[in-house]
Each structure stands twice: as C-alpha cells, then as structure tokens.
Image (cartoon, rainbow, N blue to C red; front, side, top):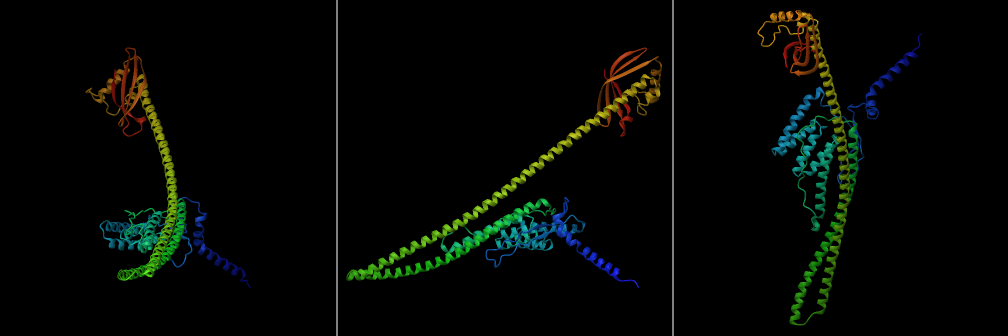
Length: 481
C-alpha cells in the first residue's frame, strides 16, 4: 500500500507557491520605491501632504501617505483619452476667454471626473472660482487637486493665494464691529490660467526633493492656520467684551442724556429760584464716569490692535521665511540649469570638433586619392601605355572646343605617345578642390622627351558619377600657364 504522506506534502507546497505567486505583485509594489535602482522607471511617488484644515475644523486628521501612479499617456490604449482630454481642456479654456463662467465650470468639472489625476483642470477651475469671488470653492478645488496630484507645486502656490484672501476677509470681518478697518475685503483673487495640457506626467526620484519642500511648506502653513484660528477666537472674545463695553457706554450716554435734561430743568429752576448744588455734583460725577469709560474703551481697543499687529508680524515672518526658501530653491535650480547648459555646450563643442576633424580627415583622404589618380595618369603617360593612359578619361571624352570625335582623339593620343623614343612626366605641387560633385586637381607638370622639355601648370577635372573617388575619370583638362 502506497503512503499518502509525500502526496500531502506536495499539495501543501503547491498551495504555498500559489499564494506566494498571488501576493507577489503587492509585495513588489510595496517594496518597489525603496529597492529599485533603475533610471527612467515609472515608480509610484509617496507623499504625506494632506489638505489644509480650516480654522473651524472639528478634528485634526492624521497624515496619510498616498502612492500616486503617474499616468502613462503615451500608451496606445490611452491615446483616445488623451485626445478627449486635450479637446475638452481647449473648449473649457475658450469658455473662460469668452466669459462663459458657468459653462467653463461645468466643462472643467467633467474633465476632473474623467481624469482625476490630471492637474490642469483643477488649477483652471480654481482660477475661475477665484475670479468669480467663490474663494471657498476655489480652495476646495485646489485641495482636491493636491489630494489627486501632490507633485504639482502650482496647486500649492494657488492654494496659498486663496488662503491669504480668506485670511484677509476673516480679519476684516473680525474687526468690522470695532469700527476699525485695516484693509478692504477681498472679493476675488487672480490665479494663473493654464493654456494647454501637459502630456508629460512622469515623475522620477528628482521630484522627491520638491515634494519634501512642499511638505515643509504645508507644515509651516498649518502652524500659521492654527495661530490664525487662535487669534480669530481671541478677537471674537474681545469683540464680545467690546460689545458689552459699548452697551455700558450707551447706557452711560443715556444716563448722561437724562442728567443733561435734568440739568437743563434744574438750571431753569435755578434761574427762577436758586442754584441746585446737589444736582451739579451728581452731574460732575456722571461726567467723570463717562470720561473713565471712554478711556477704558480706548485702552482696550489699543491693546487689541497691538495684539492683532503682532499676529500680522508673525504671519509676515513666516511668509518671509517661505519666500526665502523659495528663492533658495529657485537659485539652486538656476545653478543646476546653468551647469546643464555648460555641459551641453561642452558636448556640442566636442561634437563640432569631432565633426571638423572628421571632415579634415575625409578631405585629406579625398585629396590623397585625387593626387594618386593624377600620378597614375602621369605614370601611364611616361610608360607610353596608350590603353592605360586613355582609361583615365571618361567614356566618349573629347577635348573641350577641339571639334574632334572621341575616336580621333584616341588616335591622336596614340600617335603622340608612341612617336617618341622616351617620355618622362613628373607632377608635383598639388592643389585639390571640391567642385560640387566633381574634383579639381591643379599641379605643376614637367614634360621631357627626346624632342621636348617643358614645365607648365595644368588642371584636371575628375568625376566619380556618385561612386568612389578612386574610380573617378577625367572629364576636363586644361593648361593654366
């Protein structure tokens, strides 16, 4: 009887392998950002940036790390989606330019639903809301965009502007009851409008520094928001106290009015009868009380204004620090861009030098081949080899302006090469030049035979007909001097 123990072990091992195979993609996804060293891989980026809580939020949310997969719009399956995104974005942009605010809001909202990870619709929708004075909607849109696309600094910048406008309105509202106004209320905020969809939404390791910087800005802005909420609460309490003081002052003014009426009545009685010393004393006490209340009111208002100015100074300090950090980041980016530009310039210069050197080598090789053709021609002439000599000329060659046929020219050259007891042709002092698709070789020719001894300057024109220079043929010949 065969035991079932080995079969049981094999089944257990198979189940474990199946579970490992099923869980492997999740394990790779969780470990990918830490272990992958490849350049250009579309890795998910992890960010802990959270939406900025309002001053009246009921609870403080914990930071949740979100892994965002950059959309690959270059993939063939997303080509139609990308086209629809471009067309819809262009129509929404045209609606903004035409002043059709509600149509633009509707179009951009539909684009956000269809492409929640694309940042441009969030930015333009927030810009339309802000320009229309709907700052709360603009803020919520920007926070939604940051939740979907935490890698875009423009969302954070626009959100800062909207927060600044909301803060200014909140301070204006808080001080409205005191009769003081530090600045006009902000009805609308101008945010930048994007003209086209950025197709490149890939992110690499180089963006992590920007995300960390944004997270630092977010933490600092959270601190400012908490201080702002505390200051708003203190201002509200102070406004309540001011309202009570104003009520007391109003009551005192009413009592003062009654006393004034009574004083006038008493003065009438005094004019008729005699001065009422007791009434005058009461009136003096009332006037002193009114003056004391007015001083207290002014002191309290001055203290509140001093506290408010301190809060503004603190907020300005934080804004200055953020601006300084942004300037440092921009300077660093400029230095990196300049270094890249210099590297590209040096690479271009090296390529240019290599091209010049290659051209020089090609010219030298071409010149050597052309000079070799002239020397071969002179050697065939010196050897009085008619066939070899004529083979250096193009088929059907005739001297320009001679009016003779090719056959007559060949016979003429045969006679002149063979009717001498000896011929010596020496060539030197070469000048090779490129003439479009032909090559010109100018040289000094020293001809000596049993009947003649002469030195002239001659030029031969070669044509390779698109082939190698070594196979070029003479198509022109003339004596220069």
